Length: 288
Image (cartoon, rainbow, N blue to C red; front, side, top):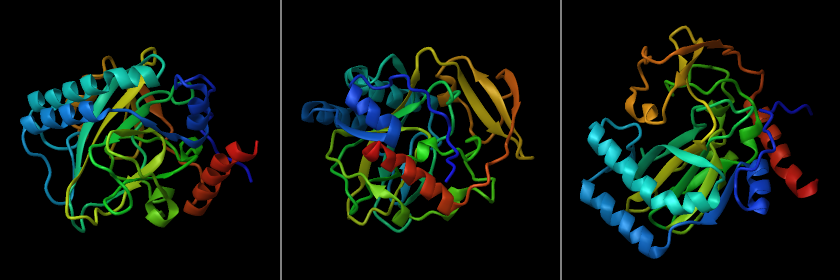
């Protein structure tokens, strides 16, 4: 079987060498992150900003919030994550953040997806640190991942996030194809932003609350990959991480400098091939 991979470079991302090896291969690791005192303080700060979510899936990164409120959330999360991220990552800085509330109900599922690209992934990797504010498992919608999928190339991951490609292999995947990552409140799920992930229904009667911060290497040039109506993808230079929190994902930000169009062709990979390739990459770490 020939693997179609994104050619991840062997540069070290995580401070711990053993964890870094696992992360590069699997695309995800779990680590202790926030103490009970830090977690309580963070929850109090978020509660003071107001009420978020209800039924269904709610994410402040995609919600229509006032810029001051969005920045307040970002500042709170970056401060809460500052020491833990510095201990975990090598020379990374925060780019975006989210406060995510998965309410009980039939519309609380978040589909299997891959986060949009922030940079040249042949040279650098963007990392998300996702931390639940409550214990999570299959009952209330823990993260579900496809290990190794961050190395399988399915073409550009651009915005708007609505899938435009009928041949996108993720569209036919179900949560039976994923692996659930149960963690305790305050523990971090650290994953490559190219990793396929999502979360199934919240079957409990309480909201599942989580927070996340996306990080990029301090030296990495940032880009926004915007998909135009004709399905062509244009790379736009992002001069500062703040831009990612200020733009409307649905509208092309004309004030950003264009670096040219990139190929929007997707490699001919089916859902079955995507899973097969991901699992071969993931399992190689236990046999090589």
